[in-house]
Image 1 (cartoon, rainbow, N blue to C red):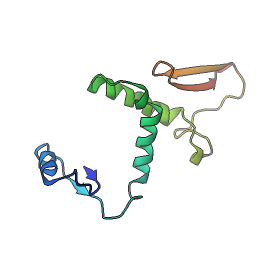
Image 2: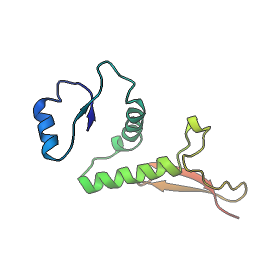
Image 3: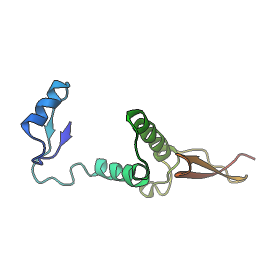
Image 4: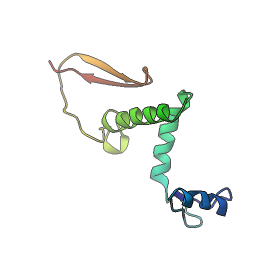
Length: 115
C-alpha cells in the first residue's frame, strides 16, 4: 500500500497490513504531486459518483465503482484528450440521438444511434 507520512499511519498500521500480506510503502517527504493522477481520479470518483449514494456494503461499492469506471473509460469525454473518450468509439454523424444512463440516471451519455 502506497501512503504518505501522515501520523495516522503508525507502526501498528503497518503491522496490520503485513498480517494481510501487504507491504507498506511510504512516499518521500514533501512530495505533494507525486501521486497527483491517482488523487485526481479518486476525486472524480467521489464527486461524480460516491457522494450521491449511501453505500450498503462491499458488493454495492464494487458495483458503483465498476459502473463509474465503465462510464469514465468508454463514455466520459476528457479535456486532456480533446474531449474524446479514453477508448475511442466509432463516430456516427447521422441518426437519432439517444441517452444511455448508468446508476439510475446519475451518469448520462448521449450518442447517435446507427441509421
